Length: 338
Image (tube, rainbow, N blue to C red):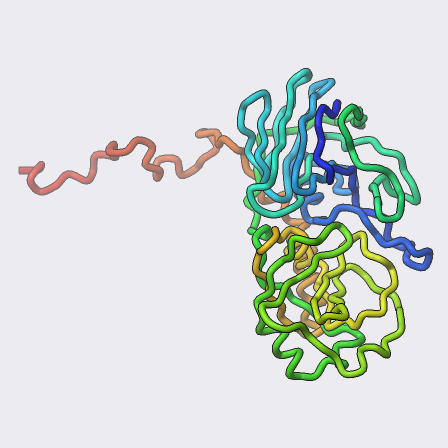
């Protein structure tokens, strides 16, 4: 795939590099891991294959050979040689045609997948660019991204995706420092509607409270220790900062809670100004929520449907009003019968 134009936040991402925290390297990888799974389901392949992540803006690309593609994550304006493409769907991309992807309609991070996956240089077990750690680089105009052999499969399929691109309520569990916050502060935290700040990147998202910030008892005595994506640090001015996939590996700000991994895409995808609220749940409940989310991801393959349905595959076709005003003829009025 030839890159003709690319936004400043376009990178190649897979599931990242878990297991390197003791060496000072966070997982990285796609900000929205669910989008990787959705693209894999649409193309009938593994969700470990690299895809192109587009932060806030896509670009313009040309296919060197016939490809299958899928578009997932934050819905973006996509055109193939001037023809609008559906999002959360798979398509055929003929050689020599140009794919243009603009800014998001809602959300923040969109993903471009290809059949067979993009080729990338494996470093520490992954192809993901981790710019904060100096691993890899952004995709830029003039690049050629190799594509692995596609075993082939269907295209023209779509998924009905639940909205995670406009904010909402996020479930959290207690952190090691939650008890440093007075109960009144914890209660205020869960009844406050925050808004995503314009400042934020793959390292984390800053949230703006409508009133004063949040404060701890003895927060300055917290020693720097291991932090992970999902941790909610309360900075010195009392502002919450939710860590994302490219966060640092240690930190000394007190953490009021930790976002469940299955809810983290809601934070990552929230556009600037989007409302966000938090809800504490018990650890046992959180484990069950994560288990159900994993089952739902595995069941996604059962949810794909054709973009254009074949009338021969619709068992209840005659129940549809195919042409307005035309009926089966059994609804004559009394006046008609007379």
